[in-house]
Length: 209
Image (cartoon, rainbow, N blue to C red; front, side):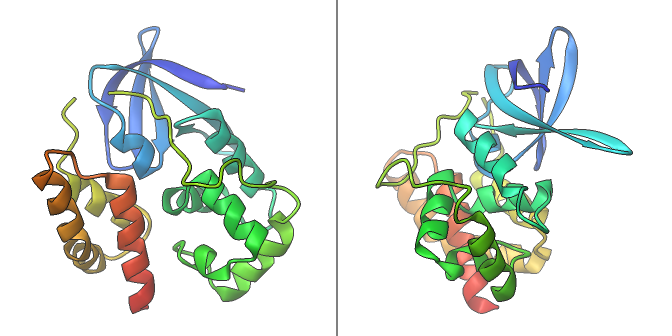
């Protein structure tokens, strides 16, 4: 198993980062929050999980070991593959997922594309004794690999939503919904927080469905 990758960020795409390790470019599937923290041509360290299929070997990358562990635990539930597990971590932090499962919060799980009410109920039952208690009472802090020149926040957000299965028109409307939050951050001289904007966009999409 490849536990982590450490090297130069050679390329970034809407769902993938390429990390150069010993002269070899390793393509790693990452959630939007993880990709947003990376910078081209700078060093990064990603915790990884290798998913083996008959016709493919796919590396999934994470900001830290806790996120990777939750990714792997989620897949022990029936019907949860790597893509759905990654989508769950794109919408919620590991601690937010632990809290949702511990409190039986169906609404939090149905905010994830691909999970309906019945699926959420089933997941709550199956994961109750697997994820464990939240590690902190506040929002989980993601320690992401550091990296320059990410795409504009709106492009990152749009690509992330399309990558999660939303139609382009839906994604564009969600970006419009969270634009005031992004503009407020820019007015304060800060970069728009793409992970938080993504969660807000997903919540707006969930309300309209």
